[in-house]
Length: 604
Image 1 (cartoon, rainbow, N blue to C red):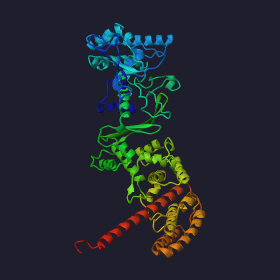
Image 2 (image 1 turned 180 degrees about the vertical axis):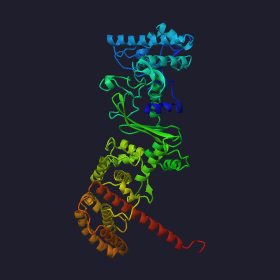
Image 3 (image 1 turned 90 degrees about the vertical axis):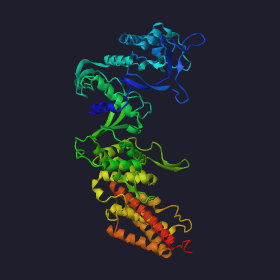
Image 4 (image 1 turned 30 degrees about the vertical axis):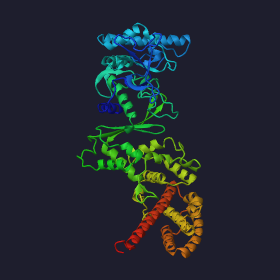
C-alpha cells in the first residue's frame, strides 16, 4: 500500500517534527527572557526584524508548525503564523476585516495559553506569553512593506520559540484534536496497529510541488473525501479509510521531502514522479532515464549484473523500488501511477528501455542513448529560422513525457498509446526533420507496439531485414546518395540545395510505388553522369539498387500503413547512418595507409 511504503521510508530521511513543514518566514520578533522586545523605535515601540536579504527576498526557510486549514474561521498555528494572527493586522481598513483580525489574534493567544498550561516550567513559553498578556504585540510598529499574509516567527534569547520540545509536543496534540476522527480508536489501514484515527489528513502536499497547467499551484490533499457521492455509502472524510495520527502525518511529510529533492523526483509539464528504495543504494534510476549520461547507464547496468543471492527475482527480494506519479486537480492529489516492484525488475526495465531505443546516429559510428526528455521534446514542432534551430517550446503533447516515463518504468510489456507514433510520423512529415531523438523514439515505439519486430529491428542497419517498408526506406536513401554523388561540388563537397528527400520523402513513405518509380527515373539519369565521373561510386550504388529491388520482388508496395511508414523512415535513416559510418571508416583507413607510406624523418 502506498501510505505504508511512505511511512516505512521515514527513518531514511531527516524529517522535521510531526506537523512541522518548511516555510518561508519573512519577519522575526526577538524577545528577552522577560518577554520584552529587544528592538524598539525612537518612540519606544517594539519593531520587527526582517529576515529578507539579497538572496532571500521573501525571508528564510524554517521548519515551523503547519497544518492544512480551511473554513470560515480557520484556526491559528502555534507560534509561527501570519501577521493577521500574531499582530492582529487586518487585510484592509473595513470593520469586518478588523474584527476578523482580532478574532484570529485572540485564537492565536489562546493557543499560546494552551502551550503554557502544558509546559508551565518552559521559560520560552513564559516569556512569549508574558509579551502577549501585556498586549505589547498591539504596539509593534509594522513596516510599510509588510503584508497581512507575511509569516512571523518568535525568537527568545536567540532561540526560535517553535523549536522547543514542548512546542512540538503541544502542536502535535492540538492537530490530533482538530483532525481526529469521531470514531476515536481503530486499526490503521497503513501500519495495521491500533491507535487514534484521523478525520482528515492534517498535512497537505506543499503548493508548487506538483506541476499544474496554470502554473499557480496550491496545497493539495493526498486523501480527500468531502462529498457524499465520493464515499462508500455516502460516508465522507476518512470514515472508510482508517488512518492513524502517526501514519497520516508521516506519509505526507515523507512525500513532501521526496518532492523537494531533485535526486528523487522527475517533473514533467503536467505531473511529477517521485521514487525511493526500500533499502537505499547509490543507484539513481530516474536520473539515468532523464539524462542518459553514460556513467549513470553504466552504473545501472553494473548494479544489475552483480552476483545475486537468487532471491532478487521473487517477491522476497531484499530490496524494492517504488515510484509514484502525481498530478493535481484543484486541491486534490491525483495518483496517475504507482509502482511497487523488486529493484532488479526496475533495473531490468530500465536496461530494456535503453536497449529498445538505442540507435546509430548519422554523426556517430556507435549506437547512442537518448535522454527521455529529449524524446518527449522531439514530438513538438521543429523550427529553423532567425531565432535559431530547435524544437518549439511546449509544442509537444502535454502527456508525452509522463507516458514515456511510464514506458521506461513498467518494462517492455507496457504498450504505449498509438497516438505517439502517429504524432511522430506527422511531425516528421510536417517539418522534414530527422535527428537522433526522433529516430530513437521511432525505434522504441515500433518495438513496444509490435514486439515481433525485435527479431529484425536493430540499433544499426540489419542487412538481412527483408520487410518491404524497410527496403523502400533504404532505396530512398540510396536515391538520395546517388543524387548527392552526381551533383555535389568537387571543391566544397556540397550537394544540391534541394534534394529528393526535401521534395518527396513524405509522399514516398505513404505511396512508395508511384513516388519512388518517378524518383528512380531521375536517379537513372544521375547514374549515367556518375558512371562517367566516378565509376567506383556508380558501381556500388547501382549494385545496391539492383539488390534492393530484387529483394522487393521488383516493385515497392502501393501504400504503407502507420507501422510501414515508420519502418520506411527507419530504413532510410539506418542506410544513411551506415553510409556515413562506412565513409568515415574508409577515410580513416586511407589516412592510416598514407601515414604508413610517408617515410619518417629518421628513415630519411
